Amino acid sequence: MEKVGVLLVSYGSRAAAIADALHRSESYDVSIFDADKQKNPFILERAAAQEIGLDTEKICDFAKKHQDKIDFGIVGPEGPIIAGIRDVIEKKTKIPMICPTKEHAIERSKVLQRRLLEKCCPSANPRFRVFDPKAYASKDKLKKDIWAWLDELENSAVVKPDAPATGKGVGVWGDHFSTREELFNHFLTCYEHGPVIIEEKVDGEEFSLQFFSDGKHLIATDAVRDYKRAFDGDLGMNTGGMGSYKDSDNKLPFMDQKDWDDALGIGKRIFDELKGEGDGPFLRGIPLYMAYTCAKDGVKVFEINSRPGDPEIINLLPILEDDFVDVCFRMLDGSLTKLDFAKKASVITYAVPMTYGGYRKAFSGDRRIDLSKAYELDKKYHDSIRIYPGSMELRGKETFALGSRVVCTVGIGDDIEAARNISLDGIVSIDGALWNRWDIGSKGHIKKSIEHMKSLRR
Ligand code: GLY
Image 1 (cartoon, rainbow, N blue to C red):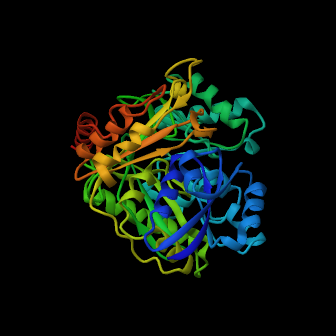
Image 2 (image 1 turned 180 degrees about the horizontal axis):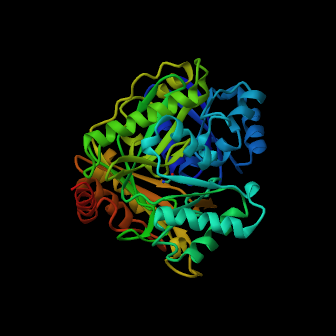
Image 3 (image 1 turned 45 degrees about the vertical axis):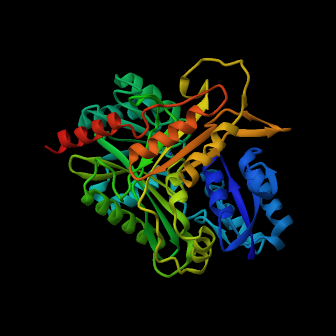
């Protein structure tokens, strides 16, 4: 088998899924060089070398040290992409990187995203206004303008900082504040760091599409639903995502085919605009992970990311029928014209630490996590289950939970319910003080989404 070396820039379960996809290659013998946030036990077991720390210079030094054995690099988390990891590594080593360049990582600015949408797909853009600290000398004038804008929006507003804040800076009327003064206080906590958007709150159901690219071609994938809120019934604070599901075809049960087609059209227009003239491969990798809302009057964009979603990419990689290493090579040589995925549903459930998402105020207990019983489920489910550690680290022979999403269980089935049952069997087999949502991909949750869309579009 041909030997291939891959620099993997890792953060969490998403990177474990990428490492798994690389490691399962049937055509290549892959050596993974893992630059990681922590000593992820799953990736470490499959890696030729691991270096902890996601600082650009540190990743670059690690890449340089092993560059004779590395054929290409691939990046999961947004931080290094936005910081320009591709530009730095491609300049200082001979390693080609799979991720967008710094300039093409549109995730870095929500203001740029809104302005880009205004230019190429205005009907998919909610009404918005940007409040820039540079434009206001006095707080009174700022407040007056915000109040006038809230009059126009009838208070139904969302506050979003320009810079990525992993959902945490986003405030929604009715959820995070219910008076103008509360909204203004939330606004000010973001405004002290830079421009802030106040935009129309769009009622609807969320989904996302992740697009793969070789810089020239744009390949759309099946729609995925993420569960951002901490608790069952979509209650509690926003998190990085407590789980996600996809159906066995390209759309979700609450979507029409037109919603998926419209989402694809929006993605294509954004891609063409970002790419500009010429064939420069600046948008290599997953340059667009588009988060949409299915609304009364069509599909709206609420966010554009420049990387694979966590957990959303984990719904897709385990059902990819192409060899992932070949896909990477095709992204690098500009020949990625199609991707084949199995017609399967998949459900991901995250198990998180006791204090994550505000579930407990404190936890002073044992943080040891034993995944051995969960891993043993592959004897029962074979390739239909995956267990991917995330915010977890190996210390000696034992593994311990850290502060973020600890481990996800992936169930794959002919329908969502079958996939969900497998994912939950994985969850209950984890030995450790963690908690999870129980309604990811549940019939009840999906029915509510379907009824919500029906009532909006009646
Ligand atoms: N699932 C949310 C994110 O990846 O940003």
